[in-house]
Length: 113
Image 1 (cartoon, rainbow, N blue to C red):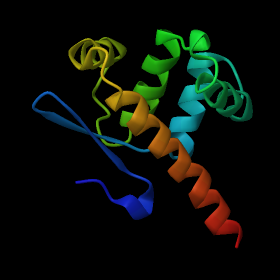
Image 2 (image 1 turned 90 degrees about the horizontal axis):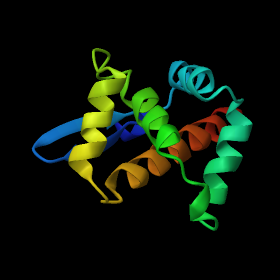
Image 3 (image 1 turned 180 degrees about the vertical axis):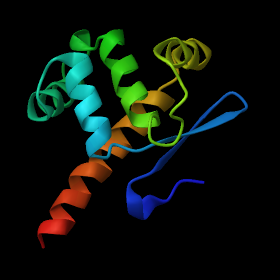
Image 4 (image 1 turned 90 degrees about the vertical axis):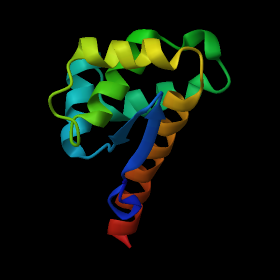
């Protein structure tokens, strides 16, 4: 079960449950995977809502992989691709990623207050 106060977000695909969390380790992993800084990644994700032709599966896989690493550290990139295959065209993955990323931003803002 996800701990919302820590920024955990549940993702159910088929009969399996995954927990996403974009802590600092996840963001560093994401920067490494995409060879971009976290601000550039965030800006790109924001553009996706108005420019869906910019969406790339490589990015979705990188986001999902980074997000699940904290709670499912043994998952590989191939495992994450299989999760995406099982999910198909459902918006569940992107919804969970967006929620977990928003939680990370929200935690940073709460920490500064």
